[in-house]
Length: 107
Image (cartoon, rainbow, N blue to C red; front, side, top):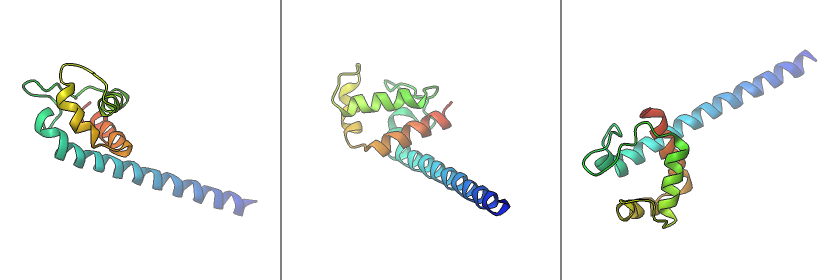
């Protein structure tokens, strides 16, 4: 019985370590995508500049929803024409990584 508990505890610990590593990789991928795609308009710290709005303070669900709507071709707001081409090249993973990075780093 003790052996089974020990094995189960080891498996649970391994799963937690793997999920933490996956989350870190997603944030890193989001950071890379942000720096290469978003920072030139929204700023290195997501504070916005000129006509480009701040992303700081936005939660992951809001950012993901907006990016998905832009990608789908929906009219989202005054800057849809600028954002649609940016979002159309994003995969579902890109959107998840970006939105989690923005929510984690800029809040």
